[in-house]
Amino acid sequence: MSKHTAITISHFPETELQGSKTYALMLGFELDDMDEVSQSLKSYERLHPSGDHLFSPFTLVKIFLELEKRKRFDAVAENVANINNAVEGSQWQASANTNYIDSHHLVQLYLKVSFVKLGLAMWKDQLLGMKEHIPEFRSTISPREIDPGDYLSRLIDEYGAAIEKCNAVLLTTSLTFQRVSVSRLRSEPDI
View: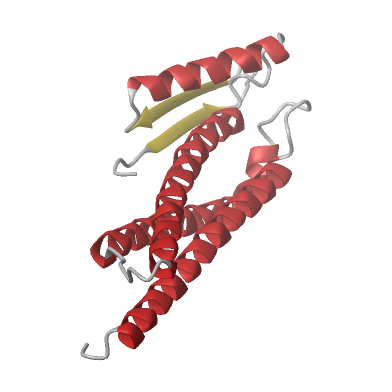
């Protein structure tokens, strides 16, 4: 993920003179992303026609977090698949005694997965920090919305699982590279 995104939300609680108002500004998104945000808002509206939750600050935060999660988890899936394909190919070639491994390509893939993992860890830390604000989020949601504490806990667990998936692939890649290197050294004593 090469783009940075941000959201800022201003919420003015209901008063005697006027209902509550919520304003949001999302930065760094493509048009497709904004279409997804629009579709999310429409689906919330269909599920709860009263609309009392539609302009809850936490609804907007959830939409933003789900969009970020999708982008980051797509990056995990793509990079993990790429590195798995490279590792499986190198294992097959090593077992065929060709002792070939494209070390430059494998290192590049390894670094991409490491970068994605770092991004996941940074977002997980942000989510952990958001847990401090659960009481404030709870004060702005409708009774039909998911509890902010439950939502954030689930999301943090999902990020933890994605980080572990990256860890497993990085460990496997490291071991594969070592195995192929040892095999090459044994078959070519001049190295």
